[in-house]
Length: 209
Image 1 (cartoon, one colour):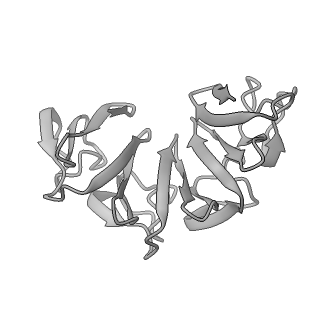
Image 2 (cartoon, rainbow, N blue to C red):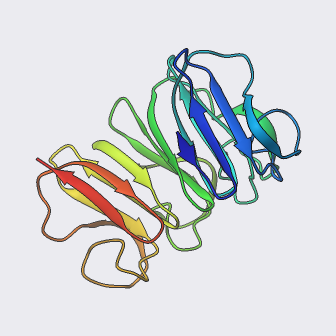
C-alpha cells in the first residue's frame, strides 16, 4: 500500500493495482479525474511489481522491468518528456531494467537493476541531484543499492554501504550536519554500513547492517 496527498493505491495479491481517493490530476489512473471513494483497478495488467504515490501522481514498475507513471505532471514528474497530466499509466521511456521507484512532491527517483539511480521532475530545491529540472530520467548515481524519494529530497544507499542524500534540507533531512539546500549528492555523516533508506516528508530513516 502507498499513500499520496489525497489518494492511495495498493498492489493486490494477484499482481493488479487499485487506487482510490482524490483524482483531480488523474492519479487514480482510471482515465478520468473523478474522485473514487472506493478502490478502482488501474487498467487490466496483473504483472505489477511495486508502486509509489507522490503528492499528485503515481509511479509503478512491472515485473518485466518497465516503469509507468500517471497523474499530475506540471513539473515533469511522470518522466514522459511532457508536462501534461496523464489520466492513465504512461510508460517512462523504453528501458526494461527498472527495479525500485519513489515519488515525492514533484519529483521521482528510481533505481535500475544495474545499480544506476535516475531522477526526473522538479528541481526547485535540488531534489534531482543535478543542476536543472528534467521531464525525462537523468542519471544521478552509478552504484546505488537502494533509493528513496521524500517530499523535496532524495537518498540512496551506495554499494559500499555509504548513505547519500540531496535536495531540500531546511530540517536537516540531507543528513550532512547542515540545513542548507544540497543540489548534489552529499554523504550522510557518520553512516558507512547502511542497507536500506526511506525518505519521508522532512526526514529520512535508514537500516544499518
